[in-house]
Amino acid sequence: MENETPRGVEPAGTRVSENISLGSDGKYRWTYAVNLFKNPVFFLLVWKIFFFIVLGIFAFTTVVDLIDWGGFSWARTLGQLKIFGIIFGVMTALVTVGYLIYAAVMRGKYVVEFEMDERGVLHRQVASQAKKAQKIGGAAMAAGILAGNYGAAASGAASQRTEMYSEFSRTRKVKTRRLFSEIKVVSGLEHNRVYAAKEDLDFVADYMIAHCPNLKGKGEKGA
Image (cartoon, rainbow, N blue to C red; front, side):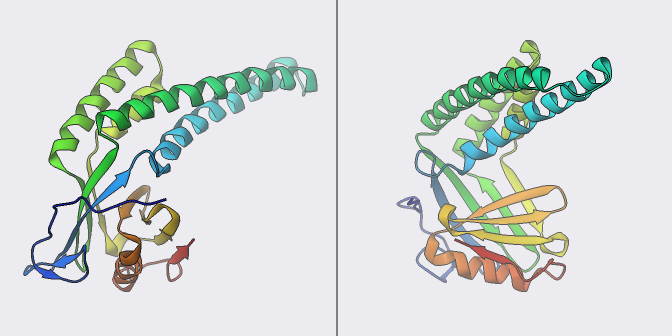
């Protein structure tokens, strides 16, 4: 699974690696492009949102069924599982189609800029893509509200957010996922995803870990 730094993008400042530079203001900067067709991380993220929404509905209806019928019934539960299995299948198909449309609009790349210093890291989608993402998210949110599909509305609202800042003093977890060229930075309920070329992942992760005083553990470096 291969991702790449956009060609022609030269970071300003003192070069730390082929892709990362250190500016005179003490900030490390780099630009990275996630291949939306090869790297499934965004598809899995959207799928998980809908998965847990459907799972929550299933759990709720099961509890209501137990109360109404005064006990557990394998026959009723199996019938509900069959229905929700169909819903999961339809949900996966719709998420797949929607994701492919999004990837096509973005020309197959999610291009993001990063700025990092001893205080924190900023994840920001490039301006040209951010405008498209906000329009797509707004349309998805409106369509979800009109259709009464609040999962789709929530997903559309989330996609309108095109930048995130993680303050290291509030960061509780730093986890490297080398397979996705990703470092997951967890601060409270916020999960910031920082991307870098595979040869730069250790440098970025080690810098974060060294500047996060409240980490639970010393950071994780997965496959």
